[in-house]
Length: 365
Image (cartoon, rainbow, N blue to C red; front, side):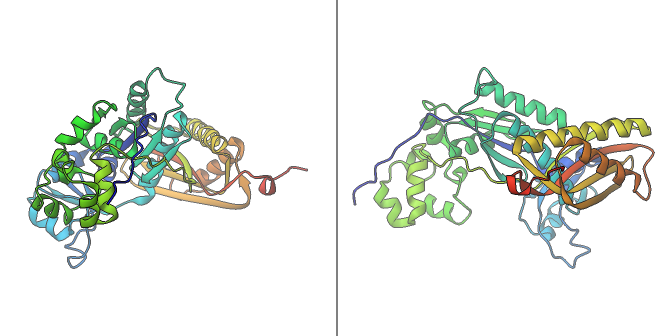
């Protein structure tokens, strides 16, 4: 078999951002007493008849071997009961924080590919705002921490495969850059189980073939790997040589939102109104950047005791400007059954988004 020729595009600059224990970190941020606990984001199996799987876990729980996709019952066996806390996932909150972080991504590039709520690829090849890509990555990490109180790990390289490997290399709060001239040495040392796409079933098969790292993987020809693993074999051959020419794929956002956690708490009506105004302005700016508008405004409020309230308003006409979004948010605030005296968090999100195309723009006649 003739080996397929490979083109290796090393001209791009790709950042992979991966939030550290994202869901668990949000829960710890909003309830600091959880930081000393082994926090598992899952339904408590003692209340579900043993059903359910782990969504994620904080780093305390991970020290006991707990990981995502593990049966919740197994986590119950691994962690001492005096340390263990199960917490039902709160995806409404997680999505809002994710939207906030993705808003920061779009401040530096329009080429953003979300992978999940907690990670994304950014193509910053055309960056003109920062002196270097490293400076851009450091700014992102710092802004995420300032805006959300959460930490992230970033990987920088010339393609998506290497950027992802780099972000995984030094978690949590890691930053790793792999330059084109460094890629081969990095990959040669990388354990085969750490290669993206090599799962728990494939790794033992490769190891049985004598493939234990990137260096030994490179000793196998393209024909050998494709014969044994099909399309996956070609990917292994390419990845062992640092080749991945996939572009960053932009996807439409389903919602755009901004939220803030306050310390000290907001303790007056004037303070709440000022923050609603600020959040509405930020949401409107993000909508304009993405050329979107939407029909549903969602207000999120969390009080000093971590009680979270959400209320939404949907109308036939589109919300887009800050004035209309603020008016809706104020109305939702006034309509809360119990407005808290001390506010820990405020958020405004616009959903039911559509592009601002000629045929669906509301004209005031």
